[in-house]
View 1 (cartoon, rainbow, N blue to C red):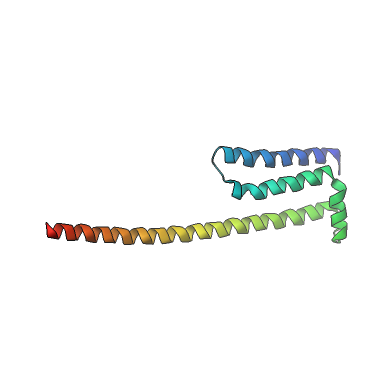
View 2: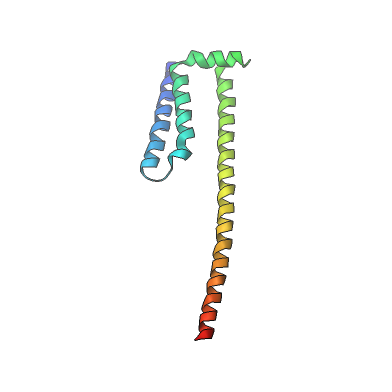
Length: 121
């Protein structure tokens, strides 16, 4: 791996370390959501510091070069991240639907109680 690419990868890894910590500190994100980005930073850093490891893994898997391994690996990781985000979105939508239904029922009960109190007065 060329030295320039190693430097870029190290800078990218440091950025993936700093950005999640900054977002958590500002209250714009939670640690549980950003662990995967920290893990990605560790993988990038290891790949930048020990480039022969990636080449060995690629050859072990029958992939011709490290670039193809990185492309396939990162595409897979990003697809998993997208699926995880989609599942979280679906869960949030379901929770909002249930809360809306419960709120509607509570409002109906409150209106019924108010109506009964007015009828007694």
